[in-house]
Length: 159
Image 1 (cartoon, rainbow, N blue to C red):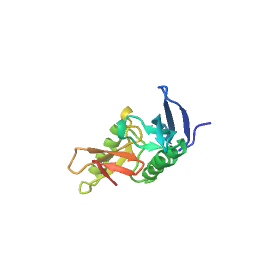
Image 2 (cartoon, rainbow, N blue to C red; image 1 turned 90 degrees about the vertical axis):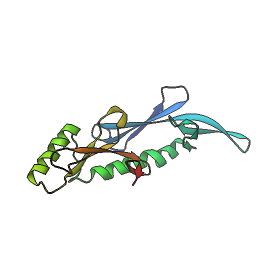
Image 3 (cartoon, rainbow, N blue to C red; image 1 turned 60 degrees about the vertical axis):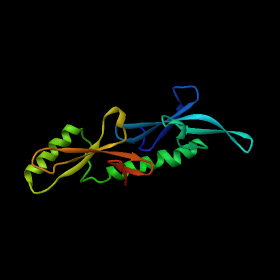
Image 4 (cartoon, rainbow, N blue to C red; image 1 turned 180 degrees about the vertical axis):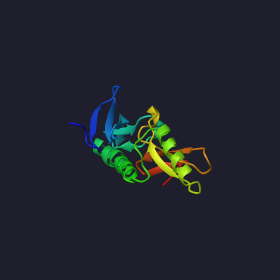
C-alpha cells in the first residue's frame, strides 16, 4: 500500500548521533530532514536536544522528535499541499514540459503573461517548485520557490 501524503518515517541517521525524517509530500515526491542529537545543560541537568543538521552551531534546536514533526515537517507538508491545490496554476510535469505548455499558452493569447508552477525535480531541491512565466514573446523565465515551515520563499523573500 503506497504511503499517504504527509506520512513520516523516523529512523536512525547515517551518522551515530543523528535522526532522519523521511516524509511524502506528493506523488513521487519524498523529502528528508535530518537532526543531530546533542546534550544541553539546563538547570544543572543534561537534556537531550535535537539540532537541525547542516545549519552550523546556530541551528534550530528542538526538545523532542514530536516538536520537529509539529514545527517543521507538518507545516512544510501543509504548505506543499496548499501550493498543489491550485489546479489551474500547478502542473505535475517536468520543467521542459511546463515550458512547452507556457509557450503554447502564450502563442494562443500573446497579450497575456502565462505563469504556472511545477515540482523542482533537481536532487538538491526536493520539496521546492519552479515558477515559470513568459513576459515577452518566447522566453520562459523561471524562479525557484522554496517551501519552509514558515511559508513560501521566492527570491529570498518569505511569503
